[in-house]
Amino acid sequence: MSAKPKARWKIHGYKGLELVFDKTLPGGYSHGEIKTLLQGLACRDYTPDEIFNASTRTGRKQGLEPRVDGPPNGNRVTIWIESGLVSYIAGYWRAGEPDVPAD
Image (cartoon, rainbow, N blue to C red; front, side, top):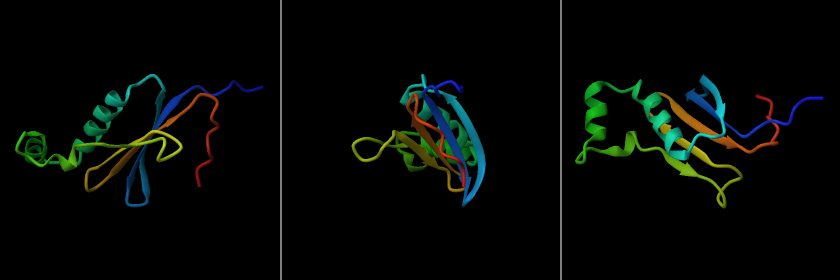
């Protein structure tokens, strides 16, 4: 008999349709911690000047500002960020919610 799955964050990175990053973290991370983690991942695809410009008060934050969606708009909390090269998506899976097999 298998144990009931615990709450978790599933993080995927896609370059186009290709899965290039796959990580599962415990569900105890806050939304802010996941946003910071996704920003760090996205920064790998930027030059130092692009990071600086996107991080200053007068800069365009569009590239480093994660977006959040969740209930009532969807079934789960989803946080995502796009670097231009890779899209990083974190989804929160509740305790007991079964994993869906990958296609």
